Image (cartoon, rainbow, N blue to C red):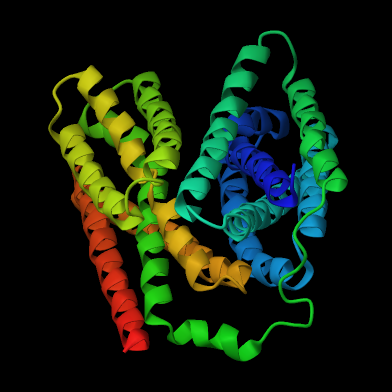
Length: 389
């Protein structure tokens, strides 16, 4: 197996790890609250430290992988994730728990960005299709952690389960140590002028702001679905949580399908169809009068959300092949800011005008994604035409 194929497998393992990382807080939150007798403010500090760490990690991973390569970053970050998980299992200090969650977020952000950039680098064609397949492994990781924890909690203590997860994550670490990775793209140093030119690149900025709304859509759907379904549709908590699970299942299934479809259709066409599917799914949830219809709509909403990151990152990877890490870092930081800002906006709207406007905000975000991506493709096409002339 050549280096590119080995690297792709490494990326899939890394995204599985990131899926586990992203679901870590929600899965063990109740255990930590009971263990340390946490009040709501202390519990909220953990919820804020994880995404803050991811944001910081997303800022720095690009320079590291472009300048020094992928191998050492993935080894160090995975080792730190394992160490943090074991620290959570054994420490008696809540301060160490907070530090562990920040480190998990920081390294998780680096792992996420680095693996997406790595797949873009080793995929000579069909970048969006390969990035979509990569996203499937995130979904598997995200689904498996709460599932395994739920199944094993009847037989083992939470501490034993957490330790077991940490030990299991040694497997990708060993794989990273053993295999070769592509050489660093900028061993002689990063061209600062090229990096600064990104801030003037209209096409890159437009693609990044598509991800601003894409990330916001995913975050709002994950964070506000249970509240919306409980308050607007009067659903019980367990039925609302099932809708959230089906959203992740839909996204994972959608990315598996897209890994084939994106080899045959233009990525931007697939993305436009996804925006339409998102809007129709949200309208269906808003108007639905039966539980099966709501659950079905959430599956299709997840499938609609599946294409955003693979398609946009595929275009960005093609545009900046020599500094793909820094370009991805630029885009992912903007995406994470969108997640944070629009979640705050959702909270303000829900408190001021009611949770029923949740769906209006989601449809508006889908419209902005379609509008901005269309502008990016038009601008990209004009530049290509000007070069040919």
